[in-house]
Each structure stands twice: as structure tokens, then as C-alpha cells.
Length: 425
Image (tube, rainbow, N blue to C red; front, side, top):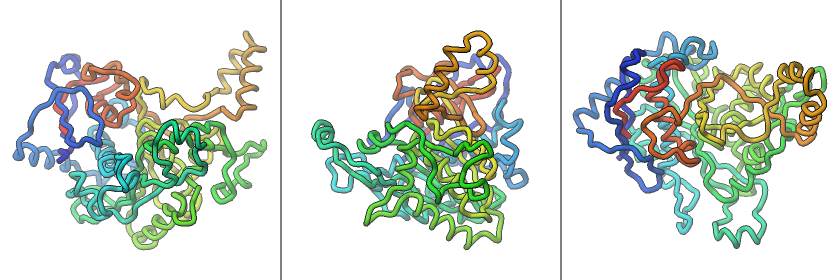
């Protein structure tokens, strides 16, 4: 059984707390979830119940739109607001439930599917009291096949379509009252199958297809003729389908459309949350929803360790559509610095006076290769290197979702980065 995160109800930013030596604990319970090198401790059932009551106590109803990013989380990130911290951690647990439910056993006949029935996913992931009910399973399909020599060398199943997450809606009256609205969650996992890894290596930008373009913006182009473009592999995973499995796009559109029609006459929010590949697909999904449904409610993306997704024009259209993106980044996580390059036009103008030829040539070559990306949304930057809790700081640990949740739990502000808390899973 996975025990939910305990978050302190009040943060102080005094230097003495920054230097606290309180023990940090971490407990894992399933073999399918990666573990981090933290100290372990036991938690009594009584204390667990008390922690749950504390975690669910804050009322968000009066300011829920601010916490969903309507004002781009102004004044809530530095220092990190406690209510926002709890909400980020709560959405992170929805993504953890995807990892917990995914069948990682390559020898299993159900490999790359959910180990649990739709109605049991949250219960089996220790989220049975979240107040949400899963309404639809989601699958992603790779648009390419592995070359035979790679398939033989890796000896991995060549799974074209795999379970990547779910859609859930809040049904509990008390939770709806606490949140101030009925919330729809879309939770998406990161890369797991060999074919998905092969797919996301297609790092060049490609134009959005017609059915994903912003129709109010002349087919996705601005006045200068620039087109909204996204990473080739991410787009393929989002729109590809087989004769037996619809695309992730089709499944998401169908379910979101149904939920908007059913609950659109009441306060409603759509929160798409994902880790790694799931974070990239979350941004594509948010763009698609706000472009497709003109009556869409506020759409928010909570992104954990996500890579870059599209170019400057894509970012501009995403913002014009009203999507709010909170991009949580570990500065020591390499994945968040990929793919491609981010070239700021203002920097190029300033530097071109000194090194005109080299920088202009480099900029032109990168543009020609379709590798100029733009970071989207509001950034919450963390650093595993500044945390004293991590004994290992390798590539895997820095990118792990659990690392992100621990860093969020302990982050205070840019002037006092981390305090030590008791955190339990």
C-alpha cells in the first residue's frame, strides 16, 4: 500500500529552518516503482489518518482559478504557496498511479497494459479516497515500427499501442466543495516501451496537421508566414492509430467532449498532468482541447520533468488559446533541456554586434534543421543538487518522478531553497 504524501501546513523561511537536520524518510512498496536512496521509517495508521486530514483541510474554493494558473501563478511560486504545493503533489500522485498500474513485465501477456480494471486503478494505487473516478483508459500508438535488427538485438516486445494513462473526474461532493469546482484529470506516464524510446528520438520539428491547427490563425501561420511546429515523435504518438486502437487524440477528444457536455453547466476545470513523455503529450492534448472545443473550461497543464515540445509559434498559439502550463523543472535533469535548442532573438541581436558571422551561421543552421524550440508556460525551477536528501544524483534519479515530488515537498523559495521535512509514500 502506498501512503500519500504528508505536507507541512506552514512554511517558514528563516535560515535556521534551512539548516534543519530533521530526518527525511521514504518508503516504497511495489517492485514496479523505482526507489530512491532515502532513509526509511514506519508510519502508524493513526498518524496516517491525521496526515490525510491535514492534507485535505485547506479550502481552495474561493481562489481555485488562481491555483489553476489563470494569472500564471503570480505570487505563488517564489516562495512556493503551501496550497499550491499540495495541489501539485496531489496531481503528481495521479501520475504515480499510472506507473503503479502499468505492467512493466516484458514476459507477461499483458505487458504494456494496465494491471487493474478501470474502476480499480485509483483504489489499487492507494488513491481510493481521492474523490475521483476513472472514466476512460488512454492508449498511445507509435507511428513507426522498429527495424528487425533492433528488435532482435533488444529482445524487447515490439508493442505498437500501449496504455499511457487515464481520464478521471471528481465525483465526491466534499472534494468538489473543497476545490470550488468539478475537476477533470488526465494523467499520463513517461516513456516505457522500446518503441516509444525509438519514436521520441525523431527530434526535428514538423508542422501541425490541419486538424490540430488553430483555425482562427490562418491555418496555424502568423503574418510573417511562421507555422506552429512540434516535435515529430511526440506528434506521431499523439495522432497515430491502428485498425484496432484509436489514437490518443481521438480518445481524449471523445472523452473530454462527453464530460464537457455532461458537466459544462457547472464550474469545471481540466487538469492534464504528466511526467517526461507524458508531460509533452499533456501539452499537445491541452493545445488540442482548447483548439477543438470553443466552450472548453480552463485547461491547466502540470508538467513534471517534461522535454521541449514545439517552436515559438506553437507557444504563442498555446497561450492565445488560454492554456495555462506550470512546467516543473529539475535543473539537474537532462531531459528538460532536450530536444533541440532555445535561441532568444534578443540575445542574438545583442551578441551579433561582436560575433556576427559565427552566431548568425549557427542560428541559420539550427533553423534549417528544424531544431529551434521554445519553452512554454510558467517555470518552477528546482535543483536536486541543492538537496541534501539525495544520496545519488545520477541521470535516472534526477529525472525520477519521486525526486520531483520530494523536491516540491521541500522547496521554499529561491533565497532559501529547501528545508527538511518528513515525507512518506
